Image 1 (cartoon, helix red, strand yellow):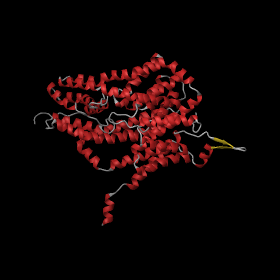
Image 2 (cartoon, each protein chain N blue to C red; image 1 turned 90 degrees about the horizontal axis):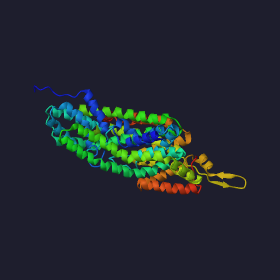
Image 3 (spheres, rainbow over the protein chains, first blue to last red; image 1 turned 135 degrees about the vertical axis):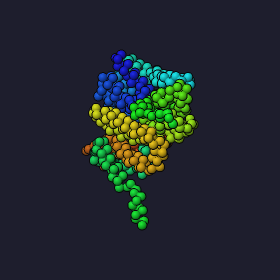
Image 4 (cartoon, each protein chain N blue to C red; image 1 turned 180 degrees about the vertical axis):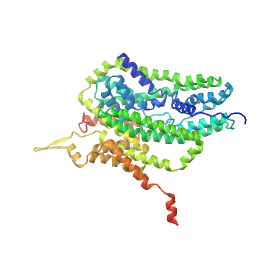
Length: 252
Length: 274
């Protein structure tokens, strides 16, 4: 359990401390960070399913300019870990994850505020010509801030939380479990709705319904729909790209 | 004139490009990616300048507020940085404020396009496919997501970086003026919307357990739904939540979903197959 707790703590730390996005860019998303937690905790299948159920609620969450409407990294790592610790059905994962993600807004704000200190130190090093000092300020202190804000709580959860989580989940009556699972099944609608707000220009919205009814009536799975969608997009491009030359000719 | 021109090798550029992925390592509210950009410049400046004074002079201009999408599209600005640093080292009269006005002028538009590509298109399509596979117990789900996302990110990132290095800001201005980019974004949005449309059916897994018992037979509401309008509940719920998100903050919507969902489930109006 000690090794598992340390590994999950490191995943929690690096999902916020983005030492290089060539590695950590996907650690923002529960599907991947939760899967890493699942591997660390030795339950890849259940953990992966939990991670996926969590991620579905965040399909349309756009985090721009350092503000986020809920902490995805915390949701993915802590939600998956708690699901596995309690032995709950992976479908419940999202109902565990969402409260963590709201608490995570506070830890994110703390992280973004404290890190401003290192810029000032780095600026001083730069003025002294100490370029390695600038580099150190970029990488080192924010690791410890994230370790404190994310890693330590994750360690405590995994190392000490197992018994409590199991007892809690076992004490909850079945109708309440079912109700929480129902809430979890509604949550993907939030991710989808936010995505519609972000990229749904009015003229594109019919394609959302096309995808819905292809799945509802023809029972096509997501891969099949992706392929059909790609074909439709290519056809639209080839048929409806304006050709300025043509209009000139027709005007003559 | 007699001085040999200082040139950056492909290796120098690749290193600068890769260090760009550390733009958000010490991410902070005060100056966002400023420290990350200063860190990325360290090796460039060590290569281009010999004296400590020159390096001090060169690095300080990076400590201004800077924020863009740093992984997919904004790398074009990183490429322009490298190109301008090289020109300055060879004596071009580019003042610090000119250097920064080019960067800050571009960071907004590039963030807009970059966030759309990375978070509005690539992420939902790949995560949609990945999650659908993963909930069925297929390990290809997270693997496809990880490999697909990184391949597109690094490929597009390097393409934009070299575009910025070779063509400077004219490349971007042409790109913004040309409508091709808007059209390609729209076409990918079609794929994204169809994928999430199908997921509204398959993943908003809500059914109704309501049954009316008559003397002879039982009337199951869900059976009627499945026959007349499959997916009517997922569709109504998605539309309802969409309506809520246009009026309330996400956290409020979450609270409403919890409250309404728990009450309706306890009353036996809706459920999810466990």
